[in-house]
Structures are given as C-alpha cells and as structure tokens.
Length: 465
Image 1 (cartoon, rainbow, N blue to C red):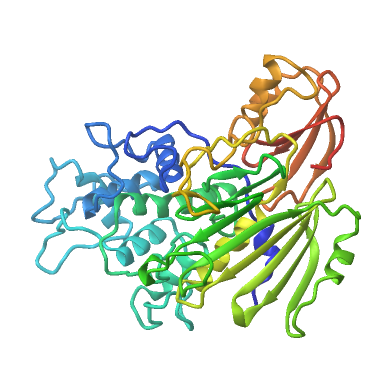
Image 2 (spheres, rainbow, N blue to C red):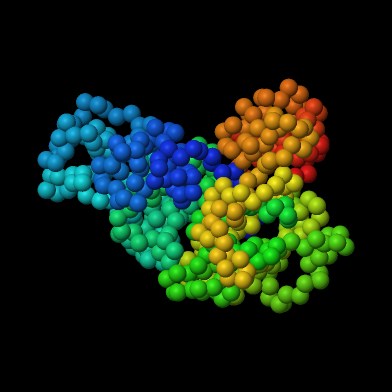
C-alpha cells in the first residue's frame, strides 16, 4: 500500500539551474533539465546549426550514440560487426559495435541493422535499462499502464520504468509503447536513470525540474508540474491540469483525466494547533485522515477516495495554516496525476525571502478569477532577494544563488564566519541538510549536501524555516 509520507518527503525543492545551451530548449522547456544535464556530461552536443530538436524522432543510430556516451562500459575494440548497412567509416559504427557487443541491440534476420529506422518507446525503455544494468522483475503481475498487458514482451521494462519514475505516460495515462519516441523523451529517460544513480535515490523525484512558484503575500514557496495552468483567484492559487481530450473548459468540474489543486492560507488568528484546527472541520465517517510532520511542519491529510478528493493542511512557521483542496479524475491518468499532486504538496515551504512574483518558469497561462487572461510572465516567483541581515551587494549576490544546484558550497565559502549549528540527517528525502550561521550578517543558511544547494536563507540564528 502506498505510504503518503514516503512520497511527500522525497520531494526535492531545488531546480536544476542551467543556462540554456540550445535555442529550441530554453529554460522553460519540459526537457530542459534533461538536455542540460546530458550536455554537461558530454552525452549530447546537438546539431551543426546549434539546435537540439527535442520534438524530432530519434533513429536507431542516434539513440545508440546517446546511450553509449551515457554508460561507462569497456568493450573489445578489436571486435567487428557485420551488417550490410553499417560500414566502418560510418559515424555511428563504433556506437553500434559497442551496443552489439554488450548485448543491448542486435541486427535483423536479413543481415541489416537499419540505423536510420526510428526507435519506439518500448524499444527505448529496454535499451536504456539494459545498458545501465537495471534489472526488471522476471514476472509482471499487474498492468503498469492501462495499455500495457502483463504478457507484452516489454511489460517488465515498462513496469520497472514506471516504478522508478523513469518513464511517464501521456496525458491519457497510457504509454503508447509502439509510437516513435522523440529526442527529448529519449534524453529524459537517460537523464532520469543517470540522476537517480548519481544521487543514490530509490526513484527519480518527478518534481526535480518543475518550475517554482512563490506567493508574495502568503510567503509560501512550492513547485508545480509542467503543463498545468495556474489561475489567480484573489489570494488563492488554483493549479489545474486540463483534460483536453475530453474537451474540459473549466477547472470547476473534474473530468476523467484532470486534476485541480486549490491553495488558500488561513491566518489562524486564534493560534490553535493543527490538531485542534481539524477538530472544527466535519468529514464523512469513511474519510481517511493522517497526521504527521512533513518537512518540519505539522501536516495532515484527509482523503475521500471514492471521490478522488484529498484535503491537505500545513501549519507554517508563522502559525498560519495552508489549506489545500485537491481532486483527481477517475480516468487512466489518475495514478500519475495523484503522484503529481502529492509531489506538489510535498514541495511547499514557508519563506520570508519571497519578495516578488517574477517567474523562473512559465505556466501555460495565468487567468484572473473574472475569466480574463493575464500575462504569462508574472505568475511565478523567485526565492531570494532582499538584504535582510546584511545590506549591500554581498547578500544580494548570495541570495541570487538560492535553489541553484551545484553552487552552494562555493557560495558559502564567500563568508568568513560560518559556523555549523545543526544537521538534519534525514533532510528532505534527498540527503542531510546543514544549518550554518553567520554572525556578521546575522543569517542562517539551510544547505542540502547531496545536491550542493542552498535551500533558503533566514534572518537571525535558528533552524525554523
């Protein structure tokens, strides 16, 4: 049975922050994290015109090059292959040779390899998992996707990819395993396998590259999935995955493959505990309630499974309570949308550093509650800004690196008086989190070791973030 806290606690708030290397895969592209990661590892280089062409289908030769550059495998360079359509002078010869030698591909009965043929989703999953030495189960007892039967030749690979969150279905909840895969999708699977291995994680955190949103007045920071629309309704924020296939036009009704998350903050002026707060809310007798601590905050969820409804409550550092209403449709995409909702909720943090609503990644559109369409540039927020605890350019520069992976230690090295005041060995599901204090600037830095990331900076000394 799924354990709610195990998924919520493995959320990683940091975005992988890269400067876009390709004009057709900018910072806002769904595959930007994957493409930039693989570019930094020397796995991809793009086309001569400087593009990556993420939406272009990938052929067998291109796919093998990407895979073989991703894995550190020693092979016998003297071994030759004998395909009538793969010549020694071909640019892809060495990649095909290595792939055949380690057993991840083979030729056809007519003696050809067909390097120019497109590769489909099922073949891609198998090739990548085998190349990385991943070991799917011998037997599949449950359909991993609505359109994958347990008897399909690729079922074990599909199930493994689903369990590890290496592979995500289309919006209808189906894998569509026989469709040609795109370069962006292929790169995404390789990236997720590499990242999970590098970070020693049980599964890929699907929110890793999601855009970050911060509410400027309510002081909460969160991440939300690509492809979701955000609607502004006063102080409330509505995040909506539209079921376009079923012609859904409003978030106000749940459709089979839709999901809605509504977030509002209660000032909790009486200052009651979360447990007492919940006592004032009536739920049906069959509702399933859980109370726990999540990311250091008192946290509760109440689920009405038959309706696809789960309400979440988070008591933030300032004692206010975030009330989060979610509902997911009953279609084939239900499982995956439910996971996205849980990761969204699990990413929520309180931050006094929220200063404006500048987006670091766009939502599809921002709609005011009166139905008018707003801009597509002022719907998110950056975490940081301000000079609390130490005025001037120094702290501004330091804060500009909040949530930027790989630069945390280098940023902290700029301080001359940092002292470690506490370590959270469990962290946020990705590894230990350290708290450093600078007396000179009177700030505490929250630092996540595994990703070398400054998660937040608070005024004064203390670990309550």
